[in-house]
Image (tube, rainbow, N blue to C red):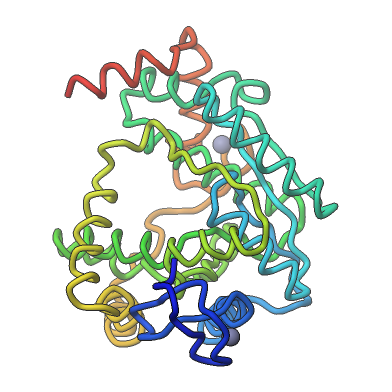
Length: 321
Ligand code: FES
Ligand code: ZN
Ligand code: ZN
């Protein structure tokens, strides 16, 4: 990862990674220290949580979610994991195995939900039945289940592993459309509101290359494969675009995102649409909603009544687009 012969900026030992955006190389110890500092800074700067809070970390088996779970536990936070089985063929089976191995290796508490076993549907079926994109059916299901697990388990904050690349790509998408409402809500921390728990993204100061390196150096085995349903996802194009800019002009990506948070987001705060309508309990599941049945319960009703759709069928259709 580092050019041979390069030295750590802090201790002059041989470097294991070069970070052009910091204009420096680091040895393993100093790189890990830098990651810890970046996470500490995000937690402090954005007032995410403290050690008295109970955290529920959404884990997928990928590098980011396992890295943040590891970082938080190492730093002494009370952090349990939460995994949702999405029923996306082998990808889901493997992702679950990675999460379970990680939790077992560190004796951590893992809460799991399985869409097929617990709610009678999976993401490919939900996508077909509700005529949604798979990522949209998946996102709706995961958001609902994280919120619900946090509420029912008495957790103070839901933590996700979104990194700098994820957030900068979403920001670029929102800017390209000047989607003010989304821009106003694109924050590293969202306070608890209307029965929804507080949400925090402590990895926003680390890139995905850095979280991958964290896992490598900490011996964390993670699922490298991306979700097969996410191919063609426009965020991937935005990430590639930003990587090209970053290569030509190191630190542009972090400046783009972090300066947005510091300088622009406060100006947009008044644009954040308060939940319109009356928030009350969903008749079926008790979650906060502005309609009779929440969007998740409507999805469950539609998707669980549909015959199971094999993942290949949804992928085949996407491939022909
Ligand atoms: Fe949700 Fe891929 S992880 S659709
Ligand atoms: Zn060093
Ligand atoms: Zn509901």
